[in-house]
Length: 98
Image 1 (spheres, rainbow, N blue to C red):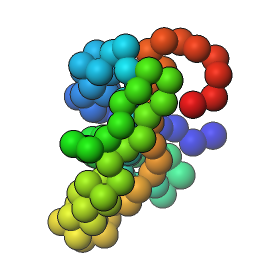
Image 2 (cartoon, helix red, strand yellow):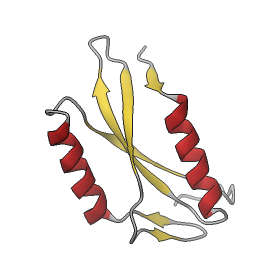
Image 3 (cartoon, rainbow, N blue to C red):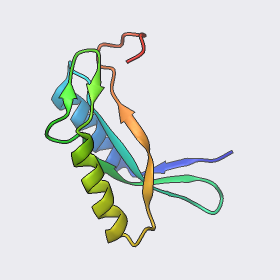
C-alpha cells in the first residue's frame, strides 16, 4: 500500500484557502513526485489563480494561470516534480457531485 506524504505547512495553506473563500468552494493542484516505493510525495501546491470561479456549489480553477505556474515549477525543479492531481473544498457539506 502506498502512502501520501504532505508537509503540515501545505495542509495549513489548504485550510487557510478554504477559510478565505468559505462558504464558496475553492481548490488547487498538487505537484510532487512518486517515490521508489510508490509513495506519493506532495511538495508544492498550485493555487486556484486570480480568475478562478468560486461558487457555492462548484469551483473552476484559472487553468491558464495554473498551467503557467506548473510549467515554471517543472523547469525550475529540472523535471523532478510533476502534476499529481487536484483538490477542492465542499464547505456547504452537500453530498451532490460538484
